[in-house]
Image (cartoon, rainbow, N blue to C red; front, side, top):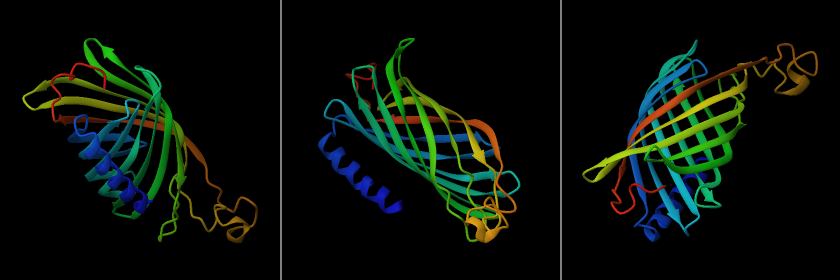
Length: 236
């Protein structure tokens, strides 16, 4: 997964060279309260529109303040690669892949998530904005060296980002994502059926994993630069 992200970073850099006039660089702070976990960190990213209907996005959020219920505190990182395909001026498709990892008091984990869905962009209340509605699927639940398996999430994500205005050489954005989904609670793979019947007395093991429904929100305040003065009030 990390090799894939490194390759896509190179692709973004090459594309940015071609589409320099449209490229947008982002930097700011992000906070989250999701599934009883909380975090606060810094976000950097780049958005590269190309060939009128396409956009390639790369983003990374490092959270030096990460807290997980019953597992303690530590740090986390989410690397994201994705983009948009605009079918018309206002409507399109969106998707991205997240590589999420954290290291807290009791455990270290890495998991991967795929997002895909619909996108809308327009001017709302005089402000350029984007809205997305995506399905989330966790496709890597990696068993950790300590014997715990990552929660398996399936859910829905509603997100938006708004360009509030510009000052000097930069513009200011606010964005948020609201998530709701079904997860499998933490389990020991020796007895929860992960290894089939080898870890238990039945097809579901001796301690089958249970499910729960939860959700949360993450929000960011970002600086966007360079400022494209001729198009800053247009949809992006």
